[in-house]
Amino acid sequence: MVIPKRNAEISKVAFPPIDRFLLGNLKKELDLKNISWSKMKEKEYMQLIEVLKRFMKEEPFWKLEYY
Image (tube, one colour):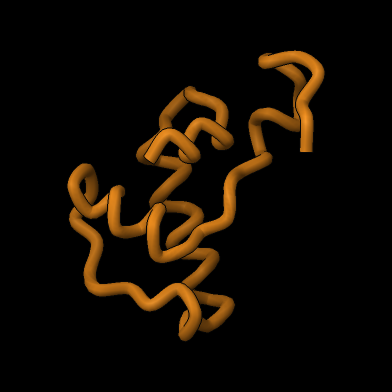
């Protein structure tokens, strides 16, 4: 997805895939347990999304891709 403007509404909710690479790199920043993204249930996934949103604070969610 290409976001036309950095401050577009979609930039607040768009995010990169939550995969092994992203979670592995975020372990350095967050206190994450050993999470297997491929075995997550929907509830666990949604809880992780909330943790990541809090971590990003006011930054657009897509900036997670830097990790």
